[in-house]
Amino acid sequence: MRTGRLARYAEAVGLYREPGTARLGQVANCADMAMTSMERLDLVESGDAHYRRLADEVRRARREIALEMYQIRADEVGGALAVELARAAQRGVRVRLLADSFGSARAARLLGALKPGGVEVCWYNPYLLGRRTHRKLIVIDGRLVALGGMNTGCEFSERRSGADAWRDLMAWFEGEAVGVLEAQLNTAWERCGGSPGADQVAVYRNAEAIPCAVAGGEAGHQGHGAAYAAVVDSASEELLLANPYFVPPRFLEERLIAARRRGVRVVIAIPRRSDVPLFKHAGRRRYTRLLDAGVEIWERCDKMVHAKVVAVDRILAGIGSVNLNRRSLLSNSETFLLTPEPGVVARVRRLVLGEAAGSSEALDARAWRRHTDRLHWAEVLAAPLAALL
Image (tube, rainbow, N blue to C red; front, side, top):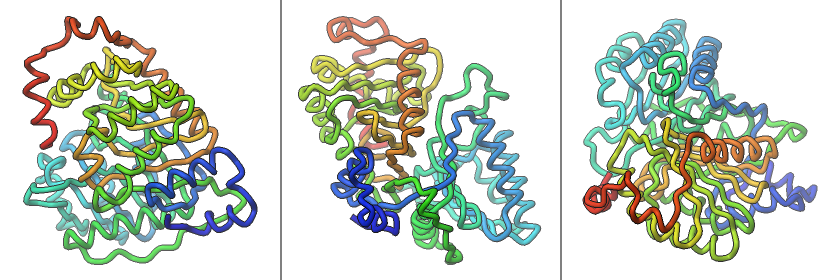
Protein backbone atom coordinates (compact mmCIF):
# COMPACT_ATOMS: atom_id res chain seq x y z
CA MET A 1 0.00 0.00 0.00
CA ARG A 2 1.35 3.40 -1.01
CA THR A 3 1.04 5.89 1.83
CA GLY A 4 0.78 9.65 1.93
CA ARG A 5 1.12 12.09 4.77
CA LEU A 6 -2.39 11.32 6.03
CA ALA A 7 -1.56 7.62 6.44
CA ARG A 8 1.55 8.43 8.48
CA TYR A 9 -0.42 10.95 10.53
CA ALA A 10 -3.22 8.44 11.08
CA GLU A 11 -0.79 5.82 12.34
CA ALA A 12 0.79 8.32 14.73
CA VAL A 13 -2.49 9.45 16.36
CA GLY A 14 -4.29 6.13 16.22
CA LEU A 15 -6.86 7.23 13.64
CA TYR A 16 -7.07 3.66 12.37
CA ARG A 17 -8.98 2.79 15.54
CA GLU A 18 -12.01 4.39 13.86
CA PRO A 19 -13.97 1.54 12.16
CA GLY A 20 -14.38 3.32 8.83
CA THR A 21 -10.74 4.36 8.55
CA ALA A 22 -9.60 0.92 9.67
CA ARG A 23 -11.75 -0.66 6.95
CA LEU A 24 -10.36 1.84 4.43
CA GLY A 25 -6.82 0.83 5.37
CA GLN A 26 -7.62 -2.86 5.03
CA VAL A 27 -9.17 -2.48 1.58
CA ALA A 28 -6.39 -0.17 0.40
CA ASN A 29 -3.77 -2.65 1.59
CA CYS A 30 -5.44 -5.54 -0.28
CA ALA A 31 -5.71 -3.54 -3.52
CA ASP A 32 -2.48 -1.49 -3.38
CA MET A 33 -4.47 1.73 -3.36
CA ALA A 34 -2.86 5.06 -2.54
CA MET A 35 -3.85 6.18 0.98
CA THR A 36 -4.23 9.94 1.01
CA SER A 37 -6.67 12.69 2.06
CA MET A 38 -9.01 15.32 0.69
CA GLU A 39 -10.54 18.57 1.93
CA ARG A 40 -13.57 20.74 1.22
CA LEU A 41 -15.45 17.86 -0.37
CA ASP A 42 -18.61 18.71 -2.31
CA LEU A 43 -20.82 15.98 -3.81
CA VAL A 44 -22.91 17.05 -6.80
CA GLU A 45 -25.82 14.95 -8.09
CA SER A 46 -27.18 17.48 -10.60
CA GLY A 47 -25.70 17.63 -14.06
CA ASP A 48 -26.47 21.34 -14.41
CA ALA A 49 -24.89 22.09 -11.02
CA HIS A 50 -21.76 20.22 -12.04
CA TYR A 51 -21.48 22.06 -15.37
CA ARG A 52 -22.00 25.43 -13.66
CA ARG A 53 -19.27 24.62 -11.15
CA LEU A 54 -16.97 23.51 -13.95
CA ALA A 55 -17.52 26.72 -15.92
CA ASP A 56 -16.92 28.84 -12.82
CA GLU A 57 -13.70 27.02 -11.92
CA VAL A 58 -12.39 27.25 -15.50
CA ARG A 59 -12.98 31.00 -15.39
CA ARG A 60 -11.15 31.25 -12.04
CA ALA A 61 -8.16 29.17 -13.16
CA ARG A 62 -4.85 31.03 -13.22
CA ARG A 63 -2.17 28.48 -14.16
CA GLU A 64 -3.43 25.23 -15.64
CA ILE A 65 -6.57 23.27 -16.47
CA ALA A 66 -6.23 19.55 -17.21
CA LEU A 67 -9.03 17.19 -18.21
CA GLU A 68 -9.09 13.47 -18.97
CA MET A 69 -12.51 12.63 -20.38
CA TYR A 70 -14.07 9.57 -21.92
CA GLN A 71 -16.88 11.38 -23.69
CA ILE A 72 -17.29 14.98 -24.77
CA ARG A 73 -20.33 15.46 -26.95
CA ALA A 74 -20.58 18.01 -29.76
CA ASP A 75 -23.81 19.36 -28.27
CA GLU A 76 -24.80 22.43 -26.24
CA VAL A 77 -23.00 21.25 -23.09
CA GLY A 78 -19.84 20.17 -24.91
CA GLY A 79 -19.83 23.35 -26.97
CA ALA A 80 -20.17 25.53 -23.86
CA LEU A 81 -17.20 23.79 -22.25
CA ALA A 82 -15.13 24.23 -25.44
CA VAL A 83 -15.84 27.97 -25.38
CA GLU A 84 -14.74 28.30 -21.74
CA LEU A 85 -11.55 26.31 -22.38
CA ALA A 86 -10.70 28.46 -25.39
CA ARG A 87 -11.21 31.64 -23.37
CA ALA A 88 -8.98 30.32 -20.59
CA ALA A 89 -6.21 29.54 -23.09
CA GLN A 90 -6.53 33.01 -24.60
CA ARG A 91 -5.88 34.65 -21.23
CA GLY A 92 -2.71 32.61 -20.73
CA VAL A 93 -3.88 29.56 -18.78
CA ARG A 94 -2.38 26.30 -19.96
CA VAL A 95 -5.28 24.05 -21.00
CA ARG A 96 -4.74 20.33 -21.58
CA LEU A 97 -7.49 17.99 -22.77
CA LEU A 98 -7.00 14.23 -23.06
CA ALA A 99 -10.06 12.78 -24.80
CA ASP A 100 -10.80 9.14 -25.51
CA SER A 101 -10.64 8.48 -29.22
CA PHE A 102 -13.68 6.19 -29.11
CA GLY A 103 -15.93 7.92 -26.59
CA SER A 104 -15.32 11.43 -27.98
CA ALA A 105 -14.96 10.51 -31.66
CA ARG A 106 -18.04 12.51 -32.70
CA ALA A 107 -16.55 15.64 -31.13
CA ALA A 108 -13.32 15.43 -33.15
CA ARG A 109 -14.14 18.55 -35.17
CA LEU A 110 -15.16 20.53 -32.07
CA LEU A 111 -11.99 19.60 -30.21
CA GLY A 112 -9.79 20.08 -33.26
CA ALA A 113 -11.04 23.65 -33.53
CA LEU A 114 -9.62 24.37 -30.07
CA LYS A 115 -6.00 23.75 -31.06
CA PRO A 116 -5.37 26.97 -33.03
CA GLY A 117 -6.52 28.93 -29.98
CA GLY A 118 -3.89 27.36 -27.74
CA VAL A 119 -5.75 24.44 -26.16
CA GLU A 120 -3.56 21.32 -26.12
CA VAL A 121 -5.59 18.30 -27.24
CA CYS A 122 -4.38 14.70 -27.16
CA TRP A 123 -6.30 11.58 -28.10
CA TYR A 124 -6.12 8.50 -25.92
CA ASN A 125 -5.30 5.39 -27.93
CA PRO A 126 -6.24 6.83 -31.33
CA TYR A 127 -6.02 3.45 -33.06
CA LEU A 128 -9.01 2.17 -31.04
CA LEU A 129 -7.20 -1.00 -29.99
CA GLY A 130 -6.89 -2.18 -26.41
CA ARG A 131 -7.95 -0.19 -23.39
CA ARG A 132 -9.79 3.10 -23.24
CA THR A 133 -9.64 5.98 -20.84
CA HIS A 134 -13.05 5.94 -19.23
CA ARG A 135 -12.19 8.60 -16.65
CA LYS A 136 -14.07 11.81 -15.95
CA LEU A 137 -11.24 13.65 -14.23
CA ILE A 138 -10.70 17.42 -14.03
CA VAL A 139 -7.78 19.17 -12.29
CA ILE A 140 -7.75 22.95 -11.80
CA ASP A 141 -4.49 24.74 -10.90
CA GLY A 142 -3.19 21.64 -9.13
CA ARG A 143 -5.45 22.46 -6.16
CA LEU A 144 -8.94 21.22 -7.09
CA VAL A 145 -10.25 17.97 -8.56
CA ALA A 146 -13.57 16.76 -9.90
CA LEU A 147 -14.18 13.05 -10.50
CA GLY A 148 -17.11 10.71 -10.87
CA GLY A 149 -19.33 9.35 -13.61
CA MET A 150 -20.58 12.36 -15.57
CA ASN A 151 -19.41 12.83 -19.12
CA THR A 152 -19.91 16.19 -20.87
CA GLY A 153 -23.24 16.08 -22.68
CA CYS A 154 -26.86 17.17 -22.62
CA GLU A 155 -28.11 13.81 -21.33
CA PHE A 156 -26.93 14.76 -17.82
CA SER A 157 -28.51 18.22 -17.90
CA GLU A 158 -31.87 18.62 -16.18
CA ARG A 159 -32.51 21.89 -18.02
CA ARG A 160 -31.95 20.30 -21.43
CA SER A 161 -33.25 16.76 -20.85
CA GLY A 162 -35.88 17.41 -18.19
CA ALA A 163 -37.22 14.34 -16.37
CA ASP A 164 -35.12 12.10 -18.64
CA ALA A 165 -31.80 13.51 -17.39
CA TRP A 166 -29.40 10.77 -16.41
CA ARG A 167 -28.75 10.17 -12.70
CA ASP A 168 -25.11 10.44 -11.63
CA LEU A 169 -22.68 11.82 -9.03
CA MET A 170 -19.52 13.94 -9.12
CA ALA A 171 -17.12 14.75 -6.27
CA TRP A 172 -15.26 18.08 -6.08
CA PHE A 173 -12.48 18.40 -3.51
CA GLU A 174 -9.07 19.79 -2.61
CA GLY A 175 -6.21 18.32 -0.58
CA GLU A 176 -3.41 15.83 -0.91
CA ALA A 177 -5.42 13.49 -3.17
CA VAL A 178 -5.32 16.16 -5.89
CA GLY A 179 -1.60 15.51 -6.37
CA VAL A 180 -2.14 11.74 -6.61
CA LEU A 181 -4.81 12.13 -9.27
CA GLU A 182 -2.92 14.80 -11.19
CA ALA A 183 0.11 12.49 -11.34
CA GLN A 184 -2.11 9.78 -12.85
CA LEU A 185 -3.46 12.22 -15.43
CA ASN A 186 0.04 13.43 -16.29
CA THR A 187 1.21 9.85 -16.84
CA ALA A 188 -1.60 9.19 -19.31
CA TRP A 189 -1.06 12.57 -20.97
CA GLU A 190 2.65 12.01 -21.58
CA ARG A 191 2.11 8.45 -22.83
CA CYS A 192 -0.28 9.88 -25.40
CA GLY A 193 2.35 12.32 -26.66
CA GLY A 194 1.61 15.41 -24.58
CA SER A 195 4.37 17.56 -23.17
CA PRO A 196 4.83 17.25 -19.39
CA GLY A 197 2.47 19.03 -17.06
CA ALA A 198 3.70 21.39 -14.37
CA ASP A 199 4.44 19.92 -10.95
CA GLN A 200 1.81 21.15 -8.51
CA VAL A 201 1.70 20.74 -4.74
CA ALA A 202 -1.73 20.52 -3.16
CA VAL A 203 -2.21 22.27 0.16
CA TYR A 204 -2.59 19.85 3.07
CA ARG A 205 -4.14 20.60 6.45
CA ASN A 206 -4.37 17.85 9.10
CA ALA A 207 -7.30 19.52 10.86
CA GLU A 208 -9.55 19.37 7.81
CA ALA A 209 -8.34 16.17 6.20
CA ILE A 210 -10.83 13.50 5.14
CA PRO A 211 -9.23 10.05 4.83
CA CYS A 212 -9.49 8.45 1.41
CA ALA A 213 -7.81 5.99 -0.92
CA VAL A 214 -7.45 6.23 -4.69
CA ALA A 215 -7.23 3.48 -7.30
CA GLY A 216 -7.18 3.50 -11.07
CA GLY A 217 -5.05 5.29 -13.58
CA GLU A 218 -3.31 4.39 -16.76
CA ALA A 219 -3.85 0.62 -16.62
CA GLY A 220 -6.60 -1.58 -15.27
CA HIS A 221 -4.25 -3.57 -13.06
CA GLN A 222 -3.53 -0.43 -11.04
CA GLY A 223 -6.04 -1.11 -8.38
CA HIS A 224 -9.69 -0.50 -9.28
CA GLY A 225 -10.60 -4.11 -10.14
CA ALA A 226 -8.81 -5.34 -7.04
CA ALA A 227 -10.36 -2.50 -5.05
CA TYR A 228 -13.90 -3.54 -5.95
CA ALA A 229 -13.08 -7.15 -5.07
CA ALA A 230 -11.66 -6.07 -1.71
CA VAL A 231 -14.66 -3.85 -1.00
CA VAL A 232 -17.09 -6.72 -1.62
CA ASP A 233 -14.97 -9.11 0.44
CA SER A 234 -14.93 -6.64 3.35
CA ALA A 235 -18.72 -6.42 3.67
CA SER A 236 -20.19 -8.01 6.80
CA GLU A 237 -23.72 -6.54 6.94
CA GLU A 238 -24.70 -4.51 3.88
CA LEU A 239 -23.41 -3.94 0.36
CA LEU A 240 -25.23 -1.40 -1.82
CA LEU A 241 -24.26 -0.80 -5.45
CA ALA A 242 -25.55 1.32 -8.32
CA ASN A 243 -24.06 0.72 -11.74
CA PRO A 244 -25.28 1.33 -15.30
CA TYR A 245 -23.48 -1.43 -17.22
CA PHE A 246 -23.58 -4.43 -14.93
CA VAL A 247 -21.96 -7.47 -16.52
CA PRO A 248 -19.77 -8.72 -13.66
CA PRO A 249 -16.81 -10.93 -14.55
CA ARG A 250 -16.73 -14.25 -12.77
CA PHE A 251 -14.41 -13.11 -9.96
CA LEU A 252 -16.87 -10.37 -8.96
CA GLU A 253 -20.00 -12.46 -9.48
CA GLU A 254 -18.62 -15.15 -7.16
CA ARG A 255 -17.75 -12.55 -4.52
CA LEU A 256 -21.24 -11.06 -4.61
CA ILE A 257 -22.75 -14.52 -4.12
CA ALA A 258 -20.26 -15.31 -1.33
CA ALA A 259 -21.17 -12.07 0.43
CA ARG A 260 -24.84 -12.99 0.37
CA ARG A 261 -24.09 -16.48 1.68
CA ARG A 262 -22.30 -15.05 4.69
CA GLY A 263 -25.37 -13.00 5.55
CA VAL A 264 -24.64 -9.69 3.84
CA ARG A 265 -27.60 -7.83 2.38
CA VAL A 266 -26.57 -7.18 -1.24
CA VAL A 267 -28.57 -4.60 -3.22
CA ILE A 268 -27.80 -3.70 -6.84
CA ALA A 269 -29.60 -0.83 -8.63
CA ILE A 270 -29.45 -1.02 -12.43
CA PRO A 271 -31.29 0.94 -15.15
CA ARG A 272 -33.81 -0.87 -17.31
CA ARG A 273 -33.70 2.03 -19.82
CA SER A 274 -30.11 1.56 -20.94
CA ASP A 275 -28.39 3.48 -23.72
CA VAL A 276 -26.35 0.32 -24.47
CA PRO A 277 -28.81 -2.58 -24.87
CA LEU A 278 -25.90 -4.97 -25.37
CA PHE A 279 -24.80 -4.52 -21.76
CA LYS A 280 -28.39 -4.68 -20.51
CA HIS A 281 -29.03 -8.07 -22.08
CA ALA A 282 -25.57 -9.45 -21.26
CA GLY A 283 -25.98 -8.42 -17.63
CA ARG A 284 -29.39 -10.06 -17.42
CA ARG A 285 -27.75 -13.32 -18.38
CA ARG A 286 -26.10 -13.17 -14.90
CA TYR A 287 -29.23 -12.36 -12.90
CA THR A 288 -30.49 -15.89 -12.27
CA ARG A 289 -27.49 -17.07 -10.23
CA LEU A 290 -27.42 -13.84 -8.23
CA LEU A 291 -31.16 -13.84 -7.54
CA ASP A 292 -31.09 -17.51 -6.55
CA ALA A 293 -28.38 -16.65 -4.01
CA GLY A 294 -30.58 -13.92 -2.51
CA VAL A 295 -28.99 -10.85 -4.08
CA GLU A 296 -31.53 -8.03 -4.48
CA ILE A 297 -31.58 -6.65 -8.01
CA TRP A 298 -33.68 -3.56 -8.70
CA GLU A 299 -34.18 -2.23 -12.22
CA ARG A 300 -35.10 1.44 -12.39
CA CYS A 301 -37.71 1.66 -15.12
CA ASP A 302 -38.18 5.40 -15.67
CA LYS A 303 -34.70 6.82 -16.28
CA MET A 304 -31.04 6.06 -16.86
CA VAL A 305 -29.02 5.40 -13.71
CA HIS A 306 -25.43 6.26 -14.67
CA ALA A 307 -23.92 6.53 -11.16
CA LYS A 308 -21.10 4.11 -10.33
CA VAL A 309 -21.11 3.99 -6.53
CA VAL A 310 -20.90 1.54 -3.64
CA ALA A 311 -21.65 1.75 0.09
CA VAL A 312 -20.47 -0.88 2.58
CA ASP A 313 -21.74 -1.54 6.12
CA ARG A 314 -22.65 2.16 6.58
CA ILE A 315 -18.96 2.95 7.12
CA LEU A 316 -17.32 3.11 3.67
CA ALA A 317 -18.32 4.53 0.28
CA GLY A 318 -16.83 4.45 -3.20
CA ILE A 319 -17.33 6.92 -6.08
CA GLY A 320 -15.81 6.90 -9.54
CA SER A 321 -16.04 5.98 -13.20
CA VAL A 322 -15.80 2.19 -12.85
CA ASN A 323 -18.46 0.06 -14.53
CA LEU A 324 -18.92 -3.45 -13.22
CA ASN A 325 -17.87 -5.26 -16.39
CA ARG A 326 -14.66 -6.92 -17.49
CA ARG A 327 -13.23 -4.14 -19.66
CA SER A 328 -13.84 -1.43 -17.08
CA LEU A 329 -12.59 -3.44 -14.11
CA LEU A 330 -9.55 -5.04 -15.72
CA SER A 331 -8.48 -2.98 -18.73
CA ASN A 332 -9.66 0.63 -18.91
CA SER A 333 -8.07 3.65 -17.32
CA GLU A 334 -10.53 4.53 -14.53
CA THR A 335 -10.84 6.42 -11.26
CA PHE A 336 -12.09 4.97 -7.98
CA LEU A 337 -12.20 6.91 -4.71
CA LEU A 338 -12.97 5.30 -1.34
CA THR A 339 -13.68 7.19 1.88
CA PRO A 340 -15.21 6.56 5.32
CA GLU A 341 -16.45 10.16 5.61
CA PRO A 342 -19.91 9.78 7.22
CA GLY A 343 -21.61 12.40 5.05
CA VAL A 344 -20.38 10.74 1.85
CA VAL A 345 -21.38 7.28 3.07
CA ALA A 346 -24.88 8.54 3.94
CA ARG A 347 -25.29 10.31 0.57
CA VAL A 348 -24.16 7.30 -1.45
CA ARG A 349 -26.33 4.98 0.60
CA ARG A 350 -29.37 7.20 0.04
CA LEU A 351 -28.59 7.41 -3.67
CA VAL A 352 -28.52 3.62 -4.14
CA LEU A 353 -31.62 2.99 -2.06
CA GLY A 354 -33.36 5.88 -3.82
CA GLU A 355 -32.62 4.40 -7.22
CA ALA A 356 -33.86 1.03 -5.97
CA ALA A 357 -37.11 2.52 -4.66
CA GLY A 358 -37.80 5.11 -7.37
CA SER A 359 -40.01 3.76 -10.15
CA SER A 360 -38.20 0.44 -9.90
CA GLU A 361 -39.02 -3.26 -9.97
CA ALA A 362 -37.52 -5.65 -7.46
CA LEU A 363 -36.79 -8.80 -9.42
CA ASP A 364 -37.95 -12.13 -8.03
CA ALA A 365 -35.81 -15.21 -8.66
CA ARG A 366 -38.71 -17.45 -9.69
CA ALA A 367 -40.60 -14.83 -11.70
CA TRP A 368 -37.44 -13.67 -13.45
CA ARG A 369 -37.23 -16.87 -15.46
CA ARG A 370 -40.53 -15.94 -17.13
CA HIS A 371 -40.27 -12.15 -17.00
CA THR A 372 -42.14 -10.46 -19.86
CA ASP A 373 -39.34 -7.93 -20.47
CA ARG A 374 -36.70 -10.61 -21.09
CA LEU A 375 -35.37 -11.49 -24.52
CA HIS A 376 -33.56 -14.79 -24.02
CA TRP A 377 -32.10 -14.84 -27.52
CA ALA A 378 -30.64 -11.34 -26.96
CA GLU A 379 -29.02 -12.47 -23.72
CA VAL A 380 -27.38 -15.44 -25.44
CA LEU A 381 -25.99 -13.25 -28.23
CA ALA A 382 -25.01 -10.31 -26.03
CA ALA A 383 -23.06 -12.16 -23.35
CA PRO A 384 -19.95 -12.98 -25.45
CA LEU A 385 -20.04 -9.67 -27.34
CA ALA A 386 -20.17 -7.57 -24.16
CA ALA A 387 -16.83 -9.01 -23.06
CA LEU A 388 -15.19 -7.43 -26.11
CA LEU A 389 -16.44 -3.85 -25.50
